[in-house]
Each structure stands twice: as structure tokens, then as C-alpha cells.
Image 1 (cartoon, rainbow, N blue to C red):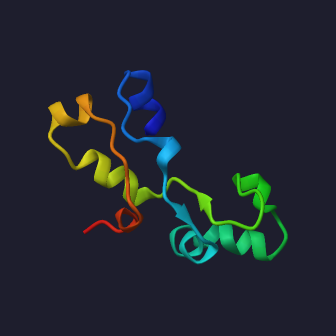
Image 2: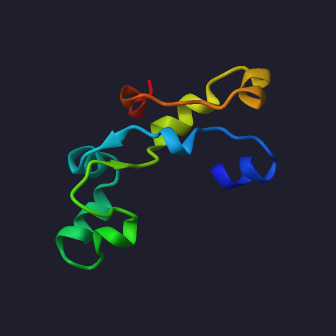
Length: 89
């Protein structure tokens, strides 16, 4: 979805300013990938996680918050998520 907006020349998120998250947050957001990691079926590097963390990870909640804005604002301003934006209600 993010790529579709990028191709339409709409930058939804500041990807360079993503909050850093630890493995517990990643596990809550992406439990299936975390299980694959634990079983050794994939490596952390396969998911773009280099080093010991925390890491800048694009979480779904960031997209929901970026899209939950007026259309003119969405087109005009890049959204910069904060750490709590991983939750969306």
C-alpha cells in the first residue's frame, strides 16, 4: 500500500524518522515472523533487522494514523509517527 501512494507521489510517512522498536513490540505486531525467527527458518537480517536493536520498523499502526487525516493534509504533509502510534483505536 505504501508503494502505491509513493507511485502517486504522496509520501505518507517519514521513513527516516520511524521510532525505534524492540523485539517485544515486533513480536506483538508480527507474531508469525517472530516464530519463524525462533525456529531458525529465517534470520533477523531477512527482515531488515541488523544488530541487537532496537530498530526502525514500519508498523501497521503508523500507516493507519498516516491515513487517518483529512485528504488535503494527507497529500500536503508527511506523517511522522511517534512510539505510541503503533496502536490504533
